[in-house]
Length: 170
Image (tube, rainbow, N blue to C red):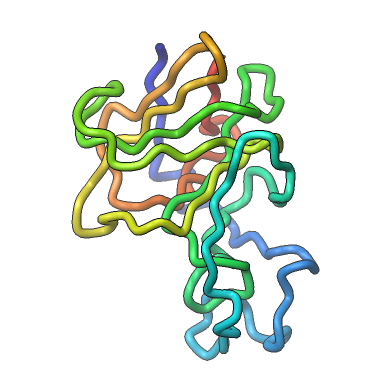
């Protein structure tokens, strides 16, 4: 097991990633996240990743840029990100667990399946930002695990976990 590293400098240095053409909405001149962006209510649907699916996109980018109250993405994500193998390939078929204690301990609040693109996402209700949770990542089968040794108040995993700080599980 290896703890995931998180550096504030990575957060401050990140540019906002734009969603692809599939997510462009009626407010094309207004950036996602701008309070004047008018979201189509038809986009507010359940959207949860699953093993064996490859319908996600923009691996490694901040999913919450588009999948939020002022964005054009299908579903408002409460947690989302990308997991990789140590060689940088997408970690397909694993699981992200959100728990009440570090290192895979405590109560399981939610398990999110990682899709074939290495992405995980959910619109299911989570206690963020009122309560913190500890992410714990399991590779498929008898593979390795990785965890954050401290809690998070956000499910926007790719805000911090990019480049050298990305989630990698053997």
